[in-house]
Image (tube, rainbow, N blue to C red; front, top):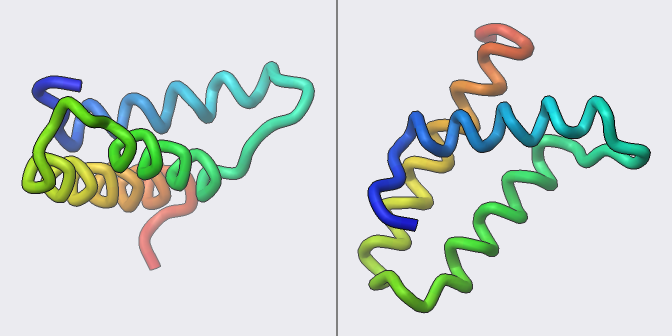
Length: 73
C-alpha cells in the first residue's frame, strides 16, 4: 500500500459505504474501520513507523467521513 494518505483512506471508506448499499448484508462504518486497521497491522511490507502513519491517516479519514455523513457536533 504505497503512498496512502488521508484522501486515499477517505475514498476507501466512502467506496465501502457505497458498496454496502447494494450488499445483502452491509457492514457498519466502524466495522469497516477495524477491517482497515487490521489490514494495515497485518501488512508485512511496511515498517512500524509507516503503519503508525497510515493509522493516523485512516483515523483522520474516518473522522472526515463521519463528519460528512452526520455533520459536526
